[in-house]
Image (cartoon, rainbow, N blue to C red; front, side):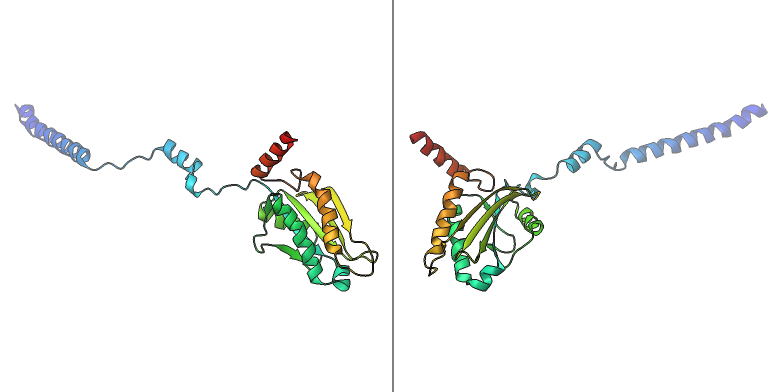
Length: 212
């Protein structure tokens, strides 16, 4: 009879443990569950940032820089320099050449020369694909000499054109003549390296070619 008497407290203990276990399971099932992050969605959000924050890429163009030599500073005046640069710039804009501006200065005109490496850095900041450098000089043999060079962002020169004013007794009209000579040599290069044109200008040029 002694073993039977001892089994009653044992059964009570087992029932108590089982009851506590069931209460623990019920409490856990009712507690709010923390959401498990979706690794796939998280990685997708990292790899695909919001499109609204992306900045549009530039489509190329040319950086136009005008430089004045020491000879021109010593023998001529700044008005002649600006007149020559204005003439060439007017040719570029009227023919819809895609120009990229200096982020700091709208018009890049220096009363001195500048290294090709520094010009390339400025052109890169402006988002250009090529550099078009106009040099205004005043040699001993003529009133003005204009040299325009085209080179890429690796520093390779692609082409060069020159024009000068005749050396006569006065300098009257020589700037316009030099600009006219130079731009007439640039005209056949429109649409090529350093003289890229907008899509509208290309369409007009194509139409004019068909009419001919």
